[in-house]
Amino acid sequence: MKVIVVGAGVVGTMHAWQAVERGHEVVHIEREAEARGASLRNFGQIWVSGRAGGEELDTALRARELWEGIGARVPDLGFRAIGSLTPVRGALELAVAEAAVAREDAAARGYKLLTPAEARAVNPALRGEFDAALWCERDAAVEPRTAQLALRQALLASGRYTFLPNREVREVVGRNGVRDDHGDVHTGDAVVLCTGASLSGLVREVAGEIPVRRVRLQMMQTDPLGEPLTTSVADADSFRYYPAYASPALDALNSGQAQDPTAAAHKMQLLMVQRLDGGLTIGDTHEYEHPFAFDTVEEPYEHLVRVVESLLGRPLPRIRRRWAGVYAQCTDTSRVVHRQQVRDAVWLVTGPGGRGMTCSPAIAETTANELAW
Image (spheres, one colour):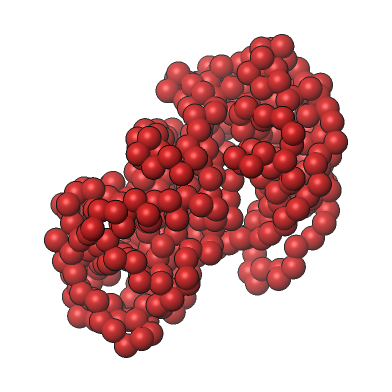
């Protein structure tokens, strides 16, 4: 079988991986020299802890298993089974963490409530003051800026993979082909359009208006910390944005403890992961209303610096990078992905939202199973 994959972000790359793994030939088309969107502008977190139960959690856990297996074969992914800690302060935040640990699926997530001393034994860099910390053993990380490159090198080694960069697919041709902006037509037994946050143009022509929206975020990266940050770290504001933490305790937190005004205005939470070079990737904000701002603003970065320094109990290293990114999210946020057949042998796969890095291996596996590759 020959599979045409359009889009070299993490979702498209994982579809190419699944096809090659199953013995098929893949032609992978990317409009840039390499992926430049949300697949690079993220934390690299394999983030199981905050996922909703049911299909979303099942997908995240399966993806976590697949990531670990791929990471063993492709060391340059930088896969690390580091887990995560969410320090909490005060009775309201603590009650949300306790409710999470009491969930029926808490064991599957690897939840455990730790004392400050236990949390510092896991992550000694957390020298700030807090009352407890929610531990999620199943969380992990990869290197987002290099993951697609590492996967591509492994795919090229198969001898069944062709990468075509700097080609924008302009139209679907017939039942099983696409034409790029060089005028070349590529046909296969299956075509998968993994267009990420590009939802106009080709996507609108072949699928119409789809139930997917674009979300913008801001993030930053620091110089090396100078010591290991042995887990990823979140703050209690993350409870407000992830469905796993929905509970009466969360309702009490939302009504009884307002977010910092800057955090509320930019729909913020702290997520933080250490890169292999020792720097910290820190974020993030959320912007949903179009048109998006074209600039980055300083107040969210200042807020994140304050929160991180309060948890680390030390000054943050110099910020060396700031950026914004846009990802695609299903408007029904309970849906893991939007998967739509648009021609006899052409499928559109987009909209995983902030779950793209986490869930992409399992999303691609599901596509391959449903299409009987």
